[in-house]
Amino acid sequence: MGHWNNGSWDWKFKWRRPLRAWEEENLQQLLETIKHIKLVQGATDTWCWSLETGGRYTTRTAYVQLAKKEENRLLEYTKIWEAQVPPKVSAFSWQLLLDRIPTKVNLAKRGILDATQNIKCFWCDQLPEDTEHLFLACSTSYNLWTKCLNWWGLYYVLGNTCIDVFTQHRWHRGSKSLKKGWGMLWFTVVWSLWLSRNETAFQHRKLDEDRLFELVQARSFHWVRNLLNLENFSYMEWISNPVRCLTNRI
Ligand SMILES: [Zn+2]
Image 1 (cartoon, helix red, strand yellow):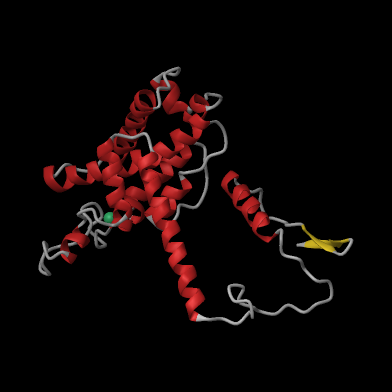
Image 2 (cartoon, rainbow, N blue to C red):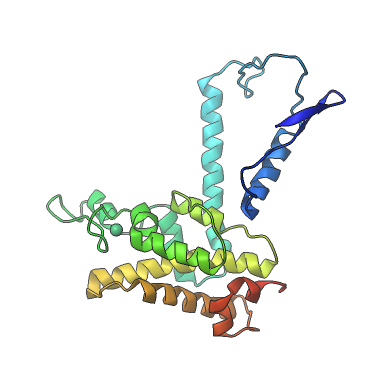
């Protein structure tokens, strides 16, 4: 984990595998956070609550800190409005992160569906259709996210919540275009999932996972060209390597 160097501790981390790009950023954040902490050679470690000068835990400081975190979370939600996506998609995504879209579970909570009605997912018919299930956990959604990651040449563990995955899409190493395109992909996926779910729900259209993925590719191509004004690549180039299409562009 590190060694002493002239009375100060130098961190030296060892990893079982090479770090992914976003993990390297997390590591930099961690090092930035701990760089002001002075370790004392020979001293014994003890627990202390850093939010109180005396080091003793108090519920008051814990509450204040948690409230701040909630503010940060809300701040993260507001990034929705900075994205260059159609306004109806921003509005939908805002509702999605606040868990206010009319999934069956939400309709049941509001009393629109009663206890006798089926609240299971339209696609798998196994688990209740709540937001996290519909957009992440259902095999259909999970498969779609996985296909998108493979398509972009990325391999990582998908976040547990919609906001986690939204956050994962807020960062990508490389050009601004690449960052914007990667951010846009999150919107494309959740919007396409919602439209597809509504086709199943209201038009009884059988779900076709391959078609759903192709729709994401086509929709993202359209948005990247028309909303980000990036046009120097063909559809075939886009579906074969979106990262190359967006790399080295301002
Ligand atoms: Zn399902």
